[in-house]
Length: 116
Length: 110
Image (cartoon, rainbow over all chains, first blue to last red; front, side):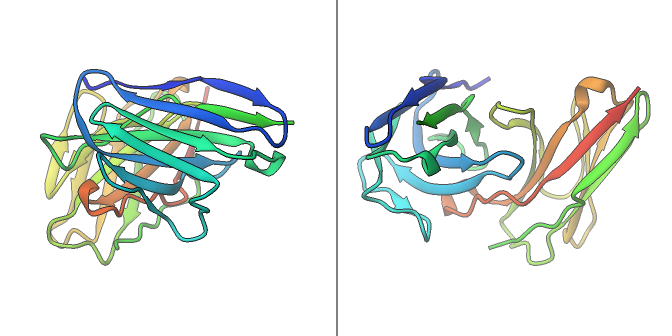
């Protein structure tokens, strides 16, 4: 089956620093990747949709200048949390849709971000 | 944008069959119905997907009535390891409408 990886799996950083999270589709090309955020005991909240080679589409209420998304290739998307603050601490999950099908979405294992 | 409604939580016992129903009254003609399972601190895992009638795989069955306004995920003979949150999603991934509902927290007891 299709595999999506995320790196790092967890990260702790100081307030004010920036953190980059990578999302890779390991055995397929992904035209579309999604980024979600999940707080404890809550559902996944879609942050943005990124298509290879174009700007990401952000959900209402998500600051695009704070959460920078780059989808430079068909196998890699990155999410950079800029000037992180403790309220950005969360579980970040990416998913990818294969270029060959439109109805399958494969999720990464998630990245736990803790901002001190 | 098809919104989904599921029970917040369900309890069951080992060996029982569990049925979780999801309502999606405004499902569009081209929408698929997909169910995911999520354990704490992990990404969601695909369980099953269907468009209409019944779909069965090695872990679950999905029942979809003719009007497609609801769907039921059936887990046969659950075990403790099936304790998780189950999400029902409706839509097409390339239409930028993949949003998760609250999900159903299933607790399987011994």
